[in-house]
Image (tube, rainbow, N blue to C red; front, side, top):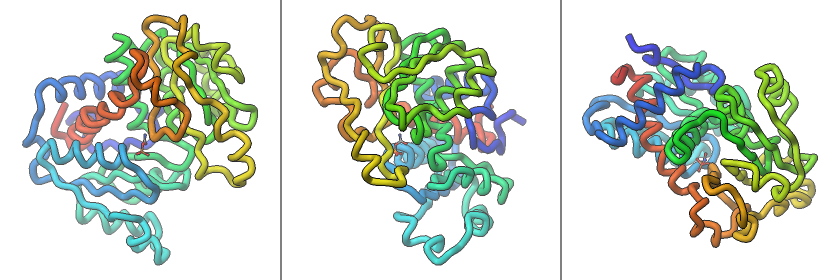
Length: 306
Ligand code: CP
């Protein structure tokens, strides 16, 4: 049995470096040699209790491209969660209808609760401000493709480091590959202490900054993030920081030749559209990489790839 068969993908920290490399290599093979019948007869349930474009549609595309089928509700408001059904009960039912479950939920820990309710594999598509492990895997895939490696890189993470689950997961993963971090945020949106403590324990080098200009010429990757309006308890606090970092073309004069700008998307106005036409912009390619990476995960957790 492959080590991935029936594995839940809840937090990136539960995947070893070897597991991560396995997913990236499997994605590369699937991109080169598609397997349109691999998951024939298998059903994916997508339970999205928060909005999504990329994660949901790339999981659906992945399942369809592997010959499997997808079910899910169009909007959480039309599911029985709106009548008060718990995550546990929802999963106990959905496991009867499907072979693998992908869940996104506003509550931190929701994916873990879902995984504990079933023996079927559960994949976390984002739980509140906590983790987004499949985004991290596609970020790593993009970094490997565009930089030739994921190790020993200098990485700036810019924007909402407090509520941004993508940067929480990515810091853990890249930290394990000996990368150095430059965290750029206002005081109110700094990287949480538990993530910084984890990096300290791992012996990872990092520094904190307020201005992108102070770090942009030093780094190989600039990972921009949206200010997560939906997580602010107070609209006034959001308004104070909503436009704090807007990346403009001028900023990229004199940067390293290999600089890549990544962003998990959606962007609101963190990156001006003119930047899209520069050689540094790779965020749309990054979103596209969600398909081979999520295909790899589905094939592995369903035991159809080893
Ligand atoms: N990156 C990401 O999670 O995008 P969606 O919210 O559109 O799924």
